[in-house]
Length: 83
Image (cartoon, rainbow, N blue to C red):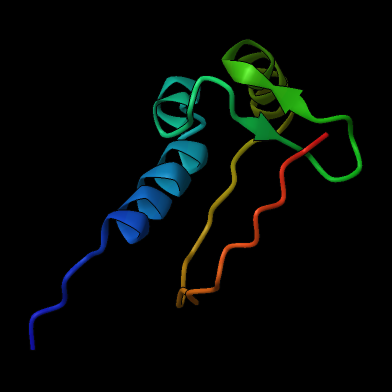
């Protein structure tokens, strides 16, 4: 059996690979310029500049991290736009 990787699955793999390597440029390469990221209950980071600063600070505060994907579930997207 040949396993194929969907574009969405590849994006997730690339995103977590960059995060696990603490590679901010690799992380930003996966995100739209107007992306929004939120760490827990912190205020959202909006756009590449804020996301870069927030992730650099986060990566400097930790020794390492690792994500391991076991499976992915496809869900319908609800159009929830931030206000």
